[in-house]
Length: 368
Ligand code: NAP
Ligand code: FE
Image (spheres, rainbow, N blue to C red):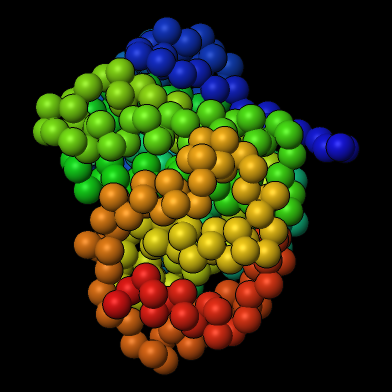
């Protein structure tokens, strides 16, 4: 087997990792643009931890705290103008995938002020400000990927990213995830699960990405049902540690393989029906894996190292009751989502044949 592996992000994992490794802020820049959502950056303590470090090293900052879930182009344009006006020279994203992805887009746009957001999708840039990411969810793995997923003017979720959008430094402190409620814990963890599954079925998988995928799926299989089984387990730091680790490993996987068919199938459910990204994607794991199981079962060896058989995998997914988040879809939407998936690059990396009728029926199966 021939393969390469490139991931330049310096990751610090563990309790209090920001203060333990704050010396990495010594030469990073003079003024930070901190990018967050409305409240979780402050509620989790991550914002205060960063402010203490910036004070210690005499680094100035401004705060843009208006990144909503699935950030759109308009938000990014506003944050870009704010960052340029304030002469920032590096970016800190704090939150889930939404603020972390916004931070990556801003790092490129502020370094290339002539760009508008659409220009990011040429992936033709070699300048970006340094990016620091602090994750407060355990799902996207954005803290170790080069990808940024934004919602465009036509309400489509689209990703971009190249070697310059890998974070320079990432901090993964599981204590920031302790306040995630049942729904956010489940809906983000299944995003990480999807990344590992899609990484191992992808035509671009390697022995090295399979190592990360397998470990990540073991952690999710052993942790997720337990953490969701009682209110007190949601606050268990050791379980949180394992989900944070699983999500980071899954991010390492997709930083090499990208995502495949289930991700693109889920995008329309998020943009048009408000179903959270992780669930929208995880809903399609069963039908896609069933098809691969019938056409190309050897591609599932690593999956079955963890879940043993299609039946066991089927039971694990069904026990999560993800259909509680579904609504009935309009058939004209299913038609356009299906055509979008058939034209995607994701489908080309998915190791089975998928027709229009197959995909149309997946939507009917998962959202009744
Ligand atoms: P998110 O959209 O960043 O946040 C969802 C919600 O969770 C927000 O209301 C947020 O509040 C809240 N929240 C975040 N951390 C919390 C905490 N510790 N305690 C309580 N509430 C908290 O969620 P996400 O699932 O992490 O990110 C989804 C986005 O990432 C999507 O746009 C998806 O497309 C993208 N994504 C990117 C990649 C990649 O490789 N770059 C991979 C997969 C998905 P606040 O608004 O107050 O922060
Ligand atoms: Fe994802």
